[in-house]
Amino acid sequence: MIGKLNHVAIVVPDLGAGANQYRDLFGAQVSEPVEMPEHGVTTVFVNLPNTKIELLHPFGPQSPIKKFLENNPSGAIHHLCYEVVDIGLAADKLRAEGMRILGDGKPKIGAHGKPVLFLHPKDALGTLIELEQI
Ligand code: CO
Image (cartoon, rainbow, N blue to C red):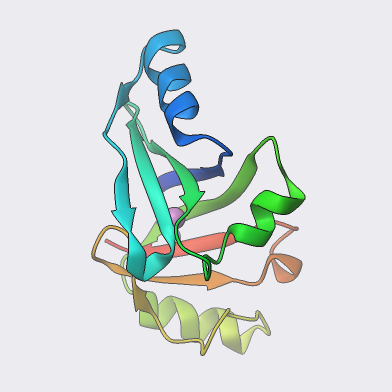
């Protein structure tokens, strides 16, 4: 069911410092910060040959990653995103197996303009997993 690893998301305390590290020290191709108020994050996209890294920082007081950063003040891996062909089918199958889907369980439009949903980390080996329909 799952396909490619689309991205790994890392919540960072300082986006500029994170972008500098990936660009200047690691030699990666790094975007300018992109504000996504509807998702409560500002994102720097790091393009690697086989996947992407997304550096995330809270945007606004209602940010869904605010608490995560408070609990992980030096930054930490936040989620993995796997690609699926049909997100509705994937959700139905996982739900039928007892896996919890966060929120109302319906796909939302994610940071890349494509339908996404998140699986409960307690049902997924302690990892927050995002599924993105490609
Ligand atoms: Co993501």
